[in-house]
Image 1: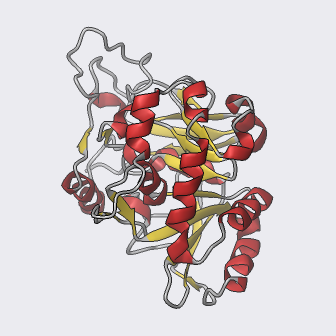
Image 2 (image 1 turned 45 degrees about the vertical axis):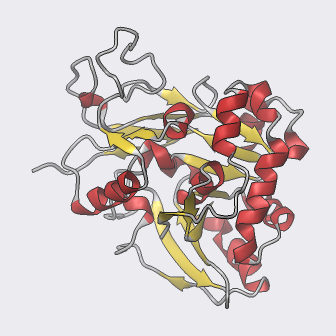
Image 3 (image 1 turned 30 degrees about the horizontal axis):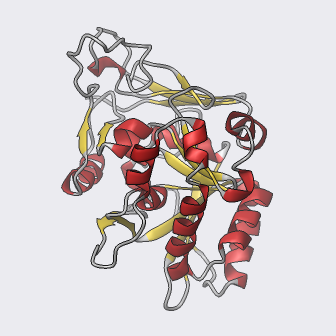
Length: 310
C-alpha cells in the first residue's frame, strides 16, 4: 500500500505547501490556489495514465476518495507517493475496478482482509464488526509501465476510515471537488499526532519511522503542550478535541470548477452530512483523562479506534 518517499527536486515544481502558508488558511485564501492544486494533481496522475477529469468524474459518480500518502504528495513537493489508493464503499467498488480496467489496468487481485502491507500502518485485524477499521477488502492492480492502484472497499462511508490512520499527517483526502486536510497547520509544518491510545504495534511504529525519516515530527502529545495558550478539548489540534468536517480546523482547497462555491456546504452536500471524530491518543495531552480510545462517526455509522493493550 502507500508509502511516501522523498522526491528528486532537481526539476522544480510548484510547492503547494509554501503557497498555502504564504496565502493563508482561510477559505478565501485556499480558493486562490485552485488552479495550482488541479495542475499538481494532473501532474501526479500522469504516471498512472489516468485523465484527471475522467477520474474525478468517476469518483463523483461512485462517491469515492483518494487518501493515504498520495494527497500528501500533492501538498508537499518533497514527498512522493508510490501508489494511488482509491477508497469507495463496497457497492461502488465494481464500477471503479471496471473504470481502471478500461484504462489498461490488469484485472485486480484481492489482497485479503488480513493484509501484510496495510494502508499506512493501521490495525490490520479487520473482522468487519463494530470494532473493526471499516475496511472490507483491498484490490491491487497495475498498469503496464505505469503505477499501482489499490482500490480500498469500505463497509462504512469511505472518509470514515481516515481518522483511524496511524497519524494526522495522512488524514487528508482528495474528492472530485478538491483537496481536504483534517489537520492542516501541523501537517504543513511537518508535525503530527500519533493516533494510538494503547501499545504502538511494530507495524505502526514502522510506518511512523518512515515519516520521521522524511522530516515529520510525530508525537502522541500535542506539540508545545506546555504552552499556556493550549486548551485541551478546545484547540482543534488537541487529541481530546472532538472534531467535525465543518469546523474551522479543516482546510479545503477546491478545484477550479468549485472555487466560487461555499466550501462547507460543498462538503456537507457531497461528502457527508455529519462527520465527527476524536483521535485515540486522548490521554497523552495536557489535561488528565482516563479515555484511551478514539472514534469516527459518519451520519449513523460509528467506528471505535480501540487498540489492544497488554
